[in-house]
Image 1: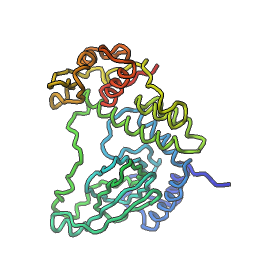
Image 2: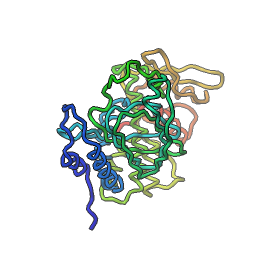
Image 3: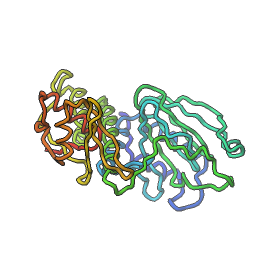
Image 4: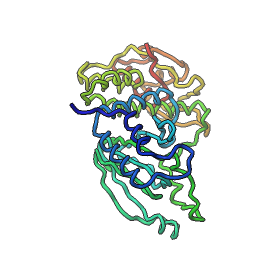
Length: 348
C-alpha cells in the first residue's frame, strides 16, 4: 500500500533534517536543502498532499485579505519555513526579482519558463545580464541556494499552479553590493490603494474569485477522498460562474442548463461608492478609489436602468434588476457584475 504524505509529514522532514530554528542567523547546509527538495518532489506527486495544502489555502482565502506577493498558507512551527501557492495566468510573471536565501519551488499544474540572470555581472553593470533559461513542466522541482535573480513566466495558454517553500530569511537585504539594482524595482501591476479603503475589498474579492476558480478546476479532476469536501468549500467561496463550472465538472448539471436566477448580490464593502454615466450607446459603472473614480464595467445602455439600480441598492435579488430582460439575461448581467469584485454573492 502506498504511503500517503500530508503537509505535517513534510514539515516534520525539515525538523528531522536539522534546519535552523526561526531567528537563528545560520543558513542550512546545501545538502540539507537538496534533501528537502527530494521530500518536496515526492510530496507534490501525491494528490492527497496537494489537497491537504489546498485545505490550508482555503482557510487563508476565507480571510478575504488582499494578497501582495506570495502569502504563506502554512509556516512550519519553530522553523519559520513558509509554504505558499503561486497562481500564474497565461503570460503572468512577477518580473525579475531577487531571492536572498534558499527556496524550493514545485510546479504543481501546467508549466512555467524561468529566466535567470548573472547576479554579480548585473550588479556590476547596473542592468540585468541574462544567464540561463529553463522549462519547468508539472512535477518539476527546483531550488535556489545562493542569492539569485530570476524571472518566472507562464508562457502557456492555461493557468499554472506552483508550490513555494521558502526560508524565513528570504527577502532580507544582503548589503553585498553598494548600489541597488534598478531593474529589480519592476512591478507587473502596481496597486495604488490604501489597505483600509473600501476598494481594497474589491481587489481582495477578485483575487479570491480567481484563486478559488483555479483550485476548483484542480479539485474537480482529483480522485482522492478529500476532494469532494474541499469542492463543497469552494462552492461557498466561489463566484456564480465558478459554482456553475463545479456543477458541470462534477456532472451535477449540464452545459446547456440555464443559469440560476434567484440569488442575492451585495456590495463587497458596505462603504463602496458607485456611480454610472453614459458613453455614447453604452453605460459605464464607476467606483470611488483612493485615487478617484475608476471605470469597472461597461455595457450597452439597454441596461441603463439596471446599472443605475445597482448604484443605489447595496443588496438586491437578481430578479429585481429592472429592464426588459429574460431571467437568463438578468443572471448574465449579475454574473458580470459579480466578476468585477464590486458585488459578492450572499449565502442563502
